[in-house]
Image (cartoon, rainbow, N blue to C red; front, side, top):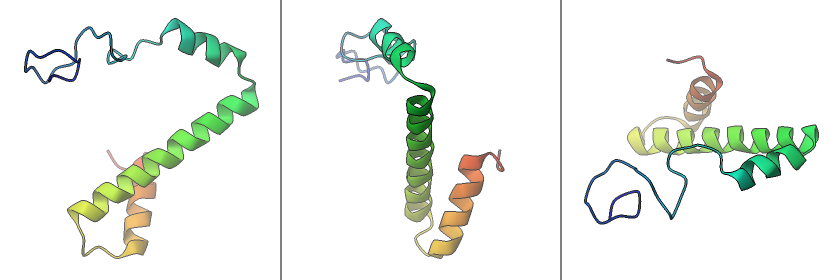
Amino acid sequence: MALDGSRSGSPCPGPSTTGNFGMIPLEQETDALRRMTPAQKLAVMHALIRQAYELKAAALRARWPEMAEDEVRAQARRMVGGDCP
């Protein structure tokens, strides 16, 4: 099954009834964001950045299992923080 839910075999996302692969905000998402307070938006942003950090650290551990944990954390922080291309 393709990412868009079809059975075409294509790995490229396309129009979908099962998800928003085009990354265009759905009306419900836009409405939810408009109802959020600035503090709620900041909390969501913080959670997303934290998740990006955790995912990057997991990828580094998988790619370089011998890397020391301190170096994994430092490298993930640099990469998520924008210090690496």
